[in-house]
Image (tube, rainbow, N blue to C red; front, top):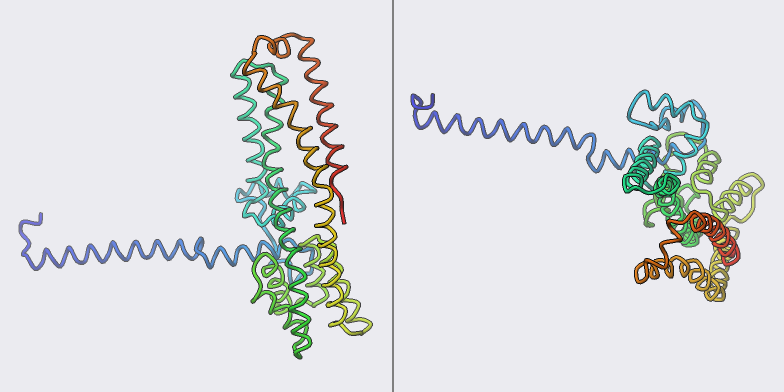
Length: 329
């Protein structure tokens, strides 16, 4: 086909093919970037965070409507569940890009996989059910861990944010400008939350409703004290600078007391870890070095009954030890 073409014509065709392929690749990249690029993901993340608020006014409803699943029929089923939106807010508080359907699918898939793995290993059905239940709970534990970590980081950043607002008020800025400074100058996750407050105010939501949405998105007692202080000051008047300064000092003093309590209770927490892990560690070591001695515990019906009761009692003991060593300040 190309034998009849001259050298210049062949070069021209090759260049045109190269340019066409390059433009197609660039078009696909731009299409991907418009939907999945950094800017699109940033906007989607901010809209997801805004959807965690409880503002149900018509002005904010369209902006805050969030998909619980990418599959239409699954979306309809999840909307019928009364606690689906609460679970969605829980995921958003953890700072994860999951949907409710993907979270439930992960729990179910891990549970079924663990059950099938233990059952195919010719183990008792009760042990397979126990393994499936434990595996299904793993995503819940991970979600709870991520949420606790994010809320803890946000709580530690709150005194610095209050100091920033206080300095802004003393410099003559408005409270809304101070909130916007937090979103621009402080690191995440507190910057994201206060940036959403500033965006809601700019979109026409009242400051009272925006702060109420903030307290709903971030369930921290100290943050709710901040919101209540600001709302009371707007209604009754007073020195907001002094109130926020005192609140910042109070939060820092509570952190110091909490650190002191953790140091004094470190021995008890270490004892709880040792008492909780030692029976399982000893059973594993004895099963490795002397399996004949431990085999009746797994094979004999009396041993299996003792094992069931022992696991229940161990679980109760772990819960009690956790309640004893976990001190709230």
